[in-house]
Image 1: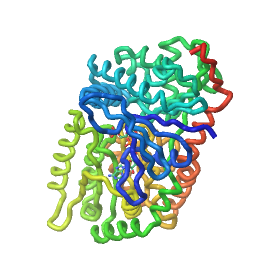
Image 2: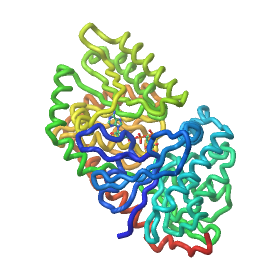
Image 3: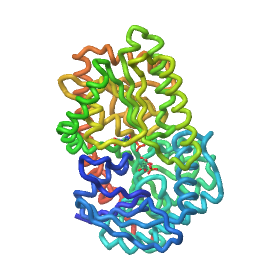
Image 4: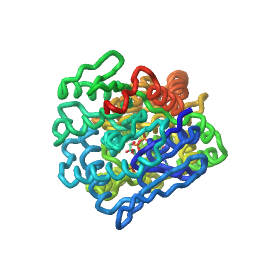
Length: 468
Ligand code: ADP
Ligand code: F6P
């Protein structure tokens, strides 16, 4: 088996199952993937240094070797807060109104990608497979090729890929996309994002797309394909059946005193549709006065990317909205929205999912959304809760037995909350059974195996070094 070199912006050192671990889908997925492969996870430590040295901090924890570098404050500002999270993230989530184009951001992005390439290069041995993740590092493959890396290299994008009409608003979009063609395999979460990418290659670059998504470019063959990510089903269900989960479940149940619960768990990000969710819930309370004091929404939303203004803004908006809605609907012994800005150990989280009659997952745009899958995996099969899922989450393509909603329509979401709360047990079980089968079968192990074997496969033969 080839060694795997995983490269992502952030490296999250694995924690014990009960600890409050990584809070991003990427980090959660890669911890379990790397445990089974020998190999190295390389990326930014999350720490600052006054002067970049390229020094690698190597550690081995819980079966995973990590190699990290520190970045300068200017790098963090221009690359992470700047190009990654003020330019690409909003653009890739169709928020062109929040997308900032700044020359310094672009330069910082290129500089940090070059620093990643220089530091990662010595770690890569002849037969290693190199697997790069996400929008922070789109040009990394081409920079590694320029340093003589002829290994098979794959890129997986955890976010959506925007329609061509949006992408062309990005200055130097051609250069960015062209740099991605240095990879052998380019993976997306869904066929929708894949279709947008292929559309760009055809319309903007005049490339022909061969059967099965093979693109020929400068003598190389690149496979572009959808590989929907899953959760670590075995680990998650084990956690959901643990004593810690049961205790968390019982404590939460006791605190709501027989009321029904809706749960949302999301990084505090404008793409997650939290404002619309709160307003839909408020609409439900107003439209159903008989149930209004009998239903609680628990929203767990750990702060994310707090140095970026749009994230500060959404945080303020949500605080105002929660106060407003609670002020309008609360009673002396009842508050309808419990809004919590912190992370929880995964087993505790599983207990909270299980205690909730409804999982409310309503992003305005999301590459996949693992919370939807975790909610399903955490349910008791004999008495499962109902998943309400945005049609704009990548997960909706695999989870048609959820109640799919348009998160922009407060009415639709409010009516769907009612439908979920009233759903008969037979329908709940039937839907849950089908959802669980797909969450179990298309788990993170399946995802990794599919991606890694595509990287190996002859369908995307790696051209010899002279062609790159
Ligand atoms: P994203 O990658 O955009 O953050 P996902 O829904 O795909 O969104 O993944 C989020 C992951 O982070 C899930 O595994 C979820 O359980 C975890 N997570 C989110 N919020 C919390 C929290 N408050 N405590 C613990 N884990 C969290
Ligand atoms: O899943 C998308 C993603 O951007 C991951 O790349 C990342 O780990 C996660 O969300 C959390 O974001 P951040 O690393 O910016 O806190």
